[in-house]
Amino acid sequence: LLLFLPERSNLAGVRHILLVLSGKGGVGKSTISTELALSLRHSGKKVGILDVDLCGPSIPRMFRVQDNDVHQCDSGWVPVFADQDKSISLMSIGFLLEKPDDAVVWRGPKKNALIKQFVADVAWGDLDFLIVDTPPGTSDEHISTVEALRPYKPLGAILVTTPQAVSVGDVRRELTFCKKTGLRVLGIVENMSGFVCPHCSECTNIFSKGGGEELAKHAGVPFLGSVPLDPQLSQSLEEGRDFIQEFPKSSAFPALTHIAQQILDGALQQSS
Amino acid sequence: AEAAELRERLRSVKHTVLVLSGKGGVGKSTFSALLAHGLAADEAKQVALLDVDICGPSIPKMMGLEGEQVHQSGSGWSPVYVEENLGVMSVGFLLSSPDDAVIWRGPKKNGLIKQFLRDVDWGEIDYLIVDTPPGTSDEHLSIVQYLSAAHIDGAVIITTPQEVSLQDVRKEINFCHKVKLPIIGVVENMSGFICPKCKNESQIFPPTTGGAEKMCQNLNVSFLGKVPLDPQIGKSCDKGQSFLSEAPESPATTSYRNIIQRIQEYCDQRHFQEEKII
Image (cartoon, helix red, strand yellow):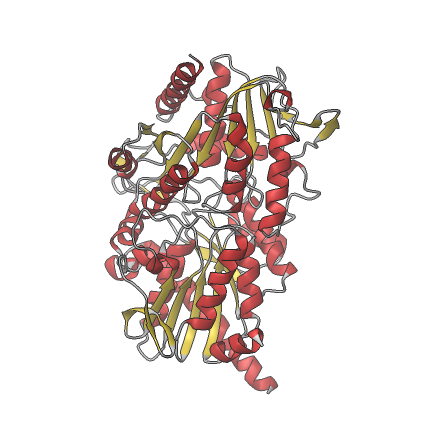
């Protein structure tokens, strides 16, 4: 008789787990995961990010730790700390590659095996939040991640989209995935929602506008907010800098902090 | 025997171009759709667009074919035709509702891709364009494996200028080398935005490490060109119209057309070289 005891596992000290999903690629899942982590850290929380995008791991570079290695300890893998105070810790296949340009050309079964390890074998210690950043789609990585996390009762999922119909079309399918796998949807974020020209302040809806909000309404899930396109944000991410600290006057800042606040409120509700 | 079956079916395909990227959301499907429209502008050419993004099929919407269904005949599955000389196939046509999710693991996805190649009655085609999902996994391995029965002219790799995209695209270039897939070249999409009001340029996705051009120089891969951001592109895709027809004066249209021409020239050259060998 084999008893599974979640209390003894590496996730025992993690208070809340949330997934960042999208049916669509390139909408800003890793960006939102990173900014959410930074926001929560600024609210005094300890945050971990688990990057289960095995083919295109973006998280290490966003914290400027892409050259770090992963070490082992008695309980498993030690996550990589993004800062001196160890308030943000990371795990990604990016840290396990010999060369950064090495392609991970794996079929499903091998990806599934690593994801199970990532979920069970990272010694996170005590965390307020574990954010799980995912690749686009509804396939091996997503099925395996949700299955492996199920015993730990995740808080839920944030779905990221850009405003235009082509993105929303894929995110609708991701909503179905959540429904079918019993994953609670915390809400939808509409990213890249309008661009304010830094020269003349004219706002152009480069990727259209409103699709995310409409989808949230149509699907009956909370709309967490619209985040505008901000080249300062892109620049920060490229250079692994703390956007939340550096650009509190940016147009993206209020939206990102508002999303983090709603997550905090939701987590508080779940705890009580 | 399976390989022979595929070879037989794909014998009538003159040129095959794969559209790849390590990174999601850089414009693969947009580019595939416009490449198909661009090549099909010559009514004498027969063009086929195959969408092997099983989880996130964008092609039906972009080609204005949402809601269409696939019909079977004695000779196999019929592609859905946008024009007489432009046929399309996607898992999107097999789904009955826009909310339907294809929650499949690798092996099942591979099975469908094989069916797409074996059972679709394309007829005689000049160009088969294959749109792919982001990554270097099942779909990519399978399409290269199954199409080896025919012959792939090469891959067009799409990226955006910033390093977070380039780092994934370098992996894709490595993938191509690993599976011996020739690279036609790299396209840098979303390369700069000109404000419609003040006409100043902003780099929304800044090329902090030199952009695609520098990466191509470093990796000795052909750079096909840059395409700027134009809000009309997204709109046309959402409406299912060809951006090239809707905005013929846009600088983005000029860029796309130049790149399409270079791809055509590449394919014609290879054809010529092979005929010489024979």
